[in-house]
Image 1: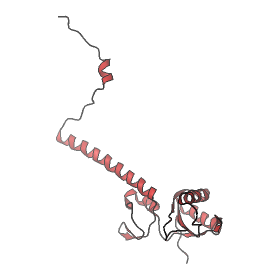
Image 2: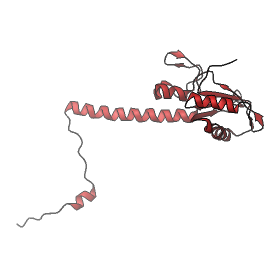
Image 3: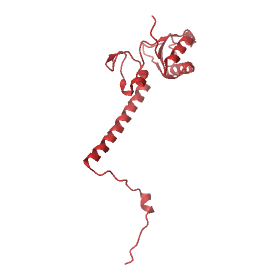
Amino acid sequence: MSLPPNTCLYINNLNDKVNKEELRAQLYALFTPYGKVIDVVARKGAKMKGQAFVVFGDLSGATTALRAMDGEFFYDKPMHIQYGKSKSHATIRIEQGVDAVPFGAKAGAIVNGKSDKVVMSRAEGEAADREREKKEEMEGTKRAREAEAEDGAPQPKKSRTEDEDEDEMEIEDDE
C-alpha cells in the first residue's frame, strides 16, 4: 500500500532489544543528515515494540531519508520505512499553533474539528504545556494591568531597596 508523502516517517522492524532512549538518539543521529529532524517517537509498549516515527521539518528531507535508508541495516535488522499515515503532533503544532493539539491527545483524536490520527512525544507535550502556561501567565499579567488602568487605581511604585536608602544623603537640622 502506497501512502501519500508526509513529513512523518514510520519505521518498523527495529531491534526491540535496544534501550528506548538509545534508539531515539541513534535514529536522530542517523536521520539528521537528510534534513531537520523535529521529533523522534519511540515507545516500548507491547503494541509499539520495534517501531518508531521520525518527524522532519520538510517533506524533501523525509523523502530523501525514506529513499536512502529503507532496507538499510540498523542494529542488525533491515529497517522498513514508509510515510506515516497522518501528520504528527509536532507538524500540526508548527502549522496551526501550539494550542492546535492538546498534550495527551491520542491517535484518532479530533483536531480542529476533523478526525485525524496523530503522533506525539512526551517531551513535545511538556514543552507545549510550558509554552501554554507561559502564554496564560503573560495574558493574566497584562489583563491585571489593563484592569488597574481602567479602574484608575494607581500603578504600584517601585519599592526602594536598602542599598538605595543608604546612598541618600542625610541632612541635619541646625536648631
